[in-house]
Image (tube, rainbow, N blue to C red; front, side, top):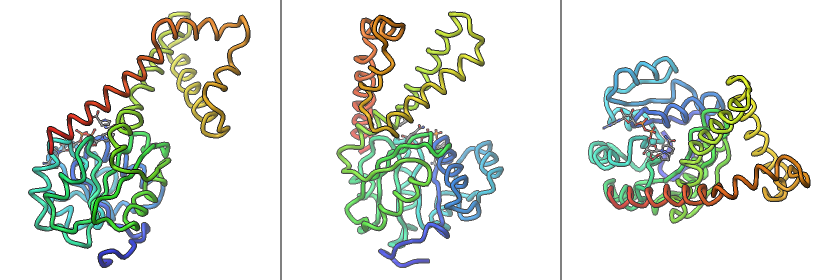
Length: 280
Ligand SMILES: NC(=O)C1=CN([C@@H]2O[C@H](COP(=O)(O)OP(=O)(O)OC[C@H]3O[C@@H](n4cnc5c(N)ncnc54)[C@H](O)[C@@H]3O)[C@@H](O)[C@H]2O)C=CC1
Ligand SMILES: O=C(O)[C@@H]1CCC=N1
């Protein structure tokens, strides 16, 4: 195993997940699809037998308990709910060494809270990813803890870039990142579902309506990313004078579409902050 502070090659990286729920599944499946981490280098733990079975089918190692995940891994992802982070850290703290990098994806839970429960000098990195890592289209921001080596965050960024976009940022940004991109896939899924409902209302078959709605979101997002144009400009380019789109935009504006999305990001950010306080 590499010494503390030495950069770890991703090729043979031993990755552990404590808590094998939806996010651990999306990340491990994404890493495997990206070919950056090997199945037999991933170890997971979870109290649910059904979940352990699902992960067994991925070909990864299933640990007997959380301490075994630490013993078998270099990089350990804390992928439990925010209120389970502290009990888990108390349980594994004595087996964490300077060789480990501890990565928390828990919404709201602060680096200081995590570092306080681990041996002094533990290399901790906090990340807010999202479920599209499953299909190599994730969005994540990585914030290093006080004892993390720059190479530790770079390693985590490299891993997350294999499954989507990833930036480094100050921890102060992470609750807002949670409100925007961490929770954001749910807003997009709700929008796709609602647009498809509109299509069904106007006579389209459900399957076709969902496909059209999803591809429209995907295409619009790709245009923003690939053209670098402002989304307002791209919107204007769809709105022909006295055409169909501007009539629809007028309805959206009257119904507070943008204000709702802004409020949604604010509400999720506020909730992330509350979770941080409740689990400090
Ligand atoms: N679901 C999402 O879209 C995202 C979630 N997150 C964060 O990821 C974390 C996990 O979220 P999900 O995967 O959605 O939750 P989940 O509920 O699907 O997974 C959590 C897993 O932890 C297991 N667990 C409970 N107690 C445990 C213990 N003592 N030791 C080991 N495992 C234990 C549960 O059985 C469950 O399978 C949360 O902290 C959340 O804030 C972050 C970004 C996106
Ligand atoms: O809803 C939640 O709390 C988690 C964090 C970001 C996405 N899902």
